[in-house]
Structure formats: structure tokens, C-alpha cells
Amino acid sequence: MKERNLKNQQWVKNSTDKRGYIVGSILATIIALSPYLFYLHESVPSSQHWDTFLFSYNSRSWGDANLAMWILTGKLLPLLFLVIWFFTCRHWWYHAILVPITMYTFQIFSFFNDELNYLDQFQLLYLVPIMAIIVPSIYLIRAKIFNKINYADKSMEELEAEFMIKPKTLWGKIKQYF
Picture (cartoon, rainbow, N blue to C red):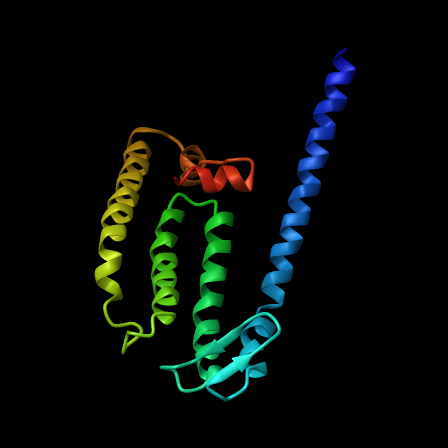
């Protein structure tokens, strides 16, 4: 019976290791392909209307579709990198990454709003409520860490490991924020 449990535990460990390698390989491929993703805008014509077999895009306020897609890829790629960093970061301060993620998300939504004259005009006003939640929570975590450092003989790495939340699945990581 003990041998069976040991084999089952070993199988679960090997399957999660394989899954980690697959997810890591996908993320590494996305990061390695990022220069190609950035230069996708060069395949977009320099006309106001762009037709593909999937969709049709009219860049009314941008002038030409090439410029619009260049601006969009300049917003999407940093957002992609920040999301990858957020879900793979193991430090206690990783919630601070939510602030630039929110900023880039707001900029992308503003990009598609044709009524705006300036893309990045009032984004700080929309970030204030998010920062009002994230910054104090990070400060409280930092205060707890330094409080424990003063009263314990643990290293900084041990304290970071103590405060670290480690969900097992991607869905678990997403679910812990909502």
C-alpha cells in the first residue's frame, strides 16, 4: 500500500513538473517572439481602411492603419510582459505590478475610443483608486516583514517565503485576486 502511494505521489510530481515545463516553454516562446510581434504593424497598409479576411478596420482619427497598429503594439507588448511578470513573480511586492498593468489596459481601451483627442491625457485620475488600494497594502506587508525581522532571527528570504501565496494552478492564481 505504501509503495502504491509513493508511486502515485511520484506520478503527480512528474505530471506537474511536465506541466511546468510546458507552460515555461510557451512563455519563453512568446517572449522570444516578441520582436516579431512588435513588428507586425509593418504588414499593415498605410491607408485609412484595412480589410482582412477576419475583420475590417477603419482608422478614422489616426490617419492611417499602420500608425494605429504601431501605437497599439507599443501598448500591447508591455502589457503582455507585465502580465507574464505578474503571474510568475515570487516576491512579496508583486501586487505593485498591477498599477502599470492597469495603466496599459486603460490606454488600450482609450485607444479604441475615437472621441478622445489625446490618448494618455487623464489616465492618472483613473489609476488613483487602484493605487489607493495597492500602495497601502504593499506598505502593510512591508511593515509586517520588517516587524518580524526586528523580533525574529529569520532572513529576508525566509520572510518572503512566509508571506508568499503559492496557488498551484493558473486558475488558482487568477482566482486569488477576485
